[in-house]
Image: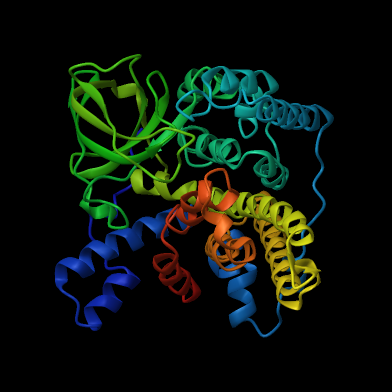
Length: 453
């Protein structure tokens, strides 16, 4: 099975390349940006015409004479009883461990036994089809559940997204052949193999044409050489989707990491303020061998098509997580406002503090609405590119604003004490502005999508 021509090979001028050329950018920058644009177009073609960006509600609201109001409504989600039981069990488990202080290990990371206990509830198989041992949750139900989980522990909620949306689950489920699905999905569903997605490199962030990790075919194996950076949820023995160059074209290999460092594979560790309760590391490959049968082959495009496919899921999950995280801010602000007295009155009686609480409530409600709307569009078959970009940017910026302008200013100097919600988590609150695409970069992608026909 072979893929269709890559956007980086048989060159065809894209909208972005034409626009940049006309704008006076260098031929190399125009070509590279055009390659990313072309990869995005390949993802677009995976969706039926009626569900592509030009038919999405945000696009039509701008260009159509009649606004499709019905597409801005969220439909009720049917949650099967066994799925509801699994979600309730996962919530109860994480709440109990948090209260018992057995959720984190001595290093402040999520305990491995806690992750495996979560596996027994079905947590890691929420987005895996039932035929492969998962619970096949509607995405709207999954997203709403993440908000509830984030009110207990945002890191646990985030790992469900890393594993199910941008980790190995979505690439294998969407692009794997039958044999690959049978081989990988059961272990991803039962938590035997938790997963991540390895895309970013030291010199390749938003510019994915700068990828340098390469895999060379040697018999029935690929030999991988290169380095990845800022990869979340990687420990020994887990499964990753690895984006690399094969014959100079982006490709994705499903890689089962070894149980310990070897001459061919090592972790690269560094100090990181954010993501302190999980593992975020660099990966170094030196003649690391991967079975050729582990290569995913999309029906259109190349490895960038696979990489982009799950991003919208992750963007909605980020907004859902923000809605839950901001609820924890509200739960911190209200008791403090009632307790703290100035000039003989609790600050809860002050108009300034009331305005902050009201603004925070509005941000939470907006994130809830965006999450439900975007997840519902995905369940109905839409790509949701423009809508999910809005959810990601709004969710991350709302959380940042809530942390700095509302939570911090209400708690004052105590915000910087050890043990305070803000002081202990300020980097966690700010980092989502970078996840799933930096906000202003994504805004440019939004406007590019707006001109699609």
